[in-house]
Length: 100
Image 1: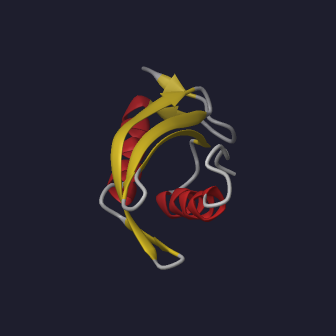
Image 2 (image 1 turned 60 degrees about the vertical axis):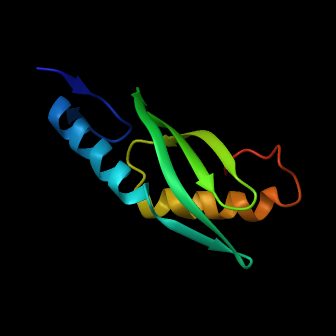
C-alpha cells in the first residue's frame, strides 16, 4: 500500500489520484476575468511532491502566459483560481512576480 503524507494527514495512492483529477477538472477550461480581460485556463500537468502539487498551466488570453507554481496538497481548485487571478492582477505591473 502506497501512502503520501501531506501536511495535516495521509492520503492513499487512490485518494491522491482522485484529488489530482478533481484539481485538474476544477482548473482546466475555467475562465478568469480580471480588469476587463479574459483568460482560459489550460492545465498542462499536475505532479505531486511531498506535501504539495506542482502545477503547470497556460493562461490563454491577451497576453498569454505559461505558469508553473507550487501549491499545498489540500488547496482546492477555487483557491488555486483565486491565486491565479491575483497573480494576473499583480503581473500587469511586474511580470516577474511569483504566485502568492
